[in-house]
Image (cartoon, rainbow, N blue to C red; front, side):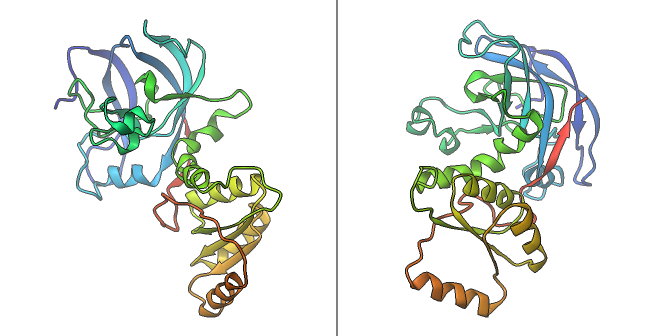
Length: 278
């Protein structure tokens, strides 16, 4: 692996961590030229995910410094390769955590690239050419068209950024459990944790008309859960009487749905905010 190849000629400004101190500083690096299947994106916003913090501090022991974090990226396409047909210059787009996969396995062929054994990520990954990938804390990005999605005109670009990680993480299990279909009888959805994932999960579940219960270790979050996000019920998981009460209620015939599925259960959440690129 190498930081760059001879094809990396575009000079880019960004922010990088150089050690596990947790600090990021301005960083100048190079990106590859726009390939036949690539699009070049002017980065406008990039969300801040807790995964970014783990990589910056090398909490998992896998960080390749210098690391340029950021995998919740929204921006405008400024260039397209000759094989790109579904995207064009000026399109509002987003890029999540995937940069490359084998494109040949059963998962890739079924649009489930995240299960591919050869998956590589938007940053701290190894691209097809052997170079290290750098993320969205930068002013531009070159991405393979396969891993780029459109952002609707009706959706603000800053609000769209967190949907590329926290959003899809909670949307996917809701879809798998038929919680996104119109129903005359709303389901009861339990969401464990009101961190970043939980916030998005509440909004999605309520948008589809379901009865939402937050299960949290933090009593102080009840006001926000109900008044700001619209949750119907709030259960403190460390309170045995509340947990027992809801267990008995469920036995009496109430239906339960699934909440944040692939989420990591961290009360602090995976989503800390969105930063604007200047």
